Length: 317
Image (cartoon, rainbow, N blue to C red; front, side, top):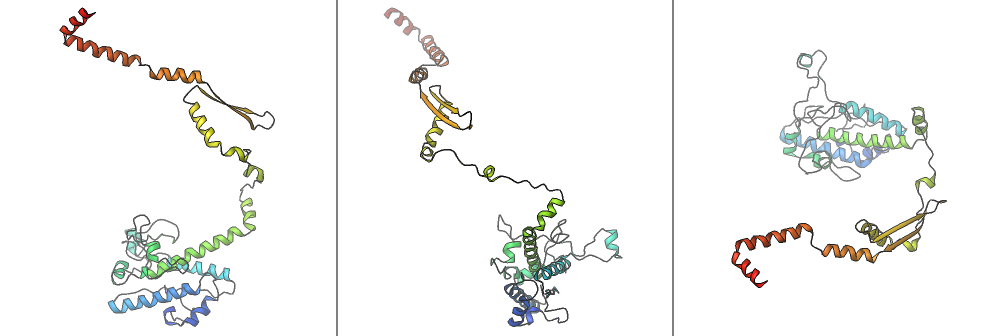
């Protein structure tokens, strides 16, 4: 991205000194900081250097930061201009390729080609990965980390441009480093606009006009006080175990008595029936009918295999 000081002066940010950048950051859009302008100026110088050393065609993004005295109006002008500069390039209305083959967009063939200027980003990365050198002035993260890496695997993955910049169907191309930086700034500007819009009291009236119902919720309904005394909270794990074991045995009974006036649980009783415990324990120690039948079957097989032992057993008896 090659922002200019104004529309009359065509000097790029890479050719101006820090005093000019500081003056430009103090005018117009208050979210276009001095650090962001410095990042862009550094990127421009690097792009021109790579182009000169390797005989590459490097695009120029003629973005002119608004100098409107109202910061919010200046930001809106910058957003409008960014959308215009980031919109994928279209073929002419009289171009037969557009109507015969249905190819409305000029650069929409490869994932590594910029949809605006046709720059071969893959070749540019081979010489110098400028995506990794242009960083966000707030987080310090590079464009490569934010837009050109798979968030799950971390593998390189080209950013996919959209037909309407921030919405619409996916294109087959991407953005070159300078357009990518302008896109990143656009996202930040729109986020700031959304924050201001949501904080505006008129936003609530607009929603009411659109049919959104506003319901006042009492604080008592949102945060209901826990009626359990502090002294009893330490016994909650104990009662949780009792509730769980009472589903497994009839020897434990937990009874809750609700106050008919307040609807709260006033009394809780726990009873242990040792008679039921002893009965259930005796049943567990007894062999099941299936197990007894299996034992008798095995005894019969042994006797049938050894008839002499059967006779001796009979004599002994």
